[in-house]
Image (cartoon, helix red, strand yellow):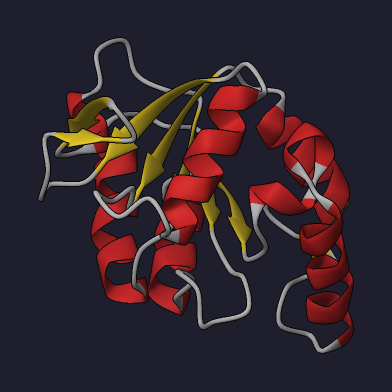
Length: 160
């Protein structure tokens, strides 16, 4: 077991990160994650099969379409779509996946987590990158504490 904070720090130390679920609607959680990663110096890639552009950048239909690959993927979709995204991550040899969870139900599904584990993909099953490190703000840090107390996000990650 590794503390969630340590897993988050290792994930966020990567330079090339894709965010699946970025939308044309800039108010969506995936877009906020995308912008924060971009603002903190990450090379970020938007993934959404339903649009060619998001946040003023090119949007890729699949993770496997990103030239040169990525070091990690933050999945901010429904749990069912997350299962397809993690399968694509395996095809693209992505070593890390973060299944987003905020106040709502999030992207985590048992099937997506199991798929990551079966394919040797390090997985963070819950929480939000904006709760940690340079991408964090006070509101997200408070949310992290509340969600950990209520058991909605893990305190430790077994497969990272």
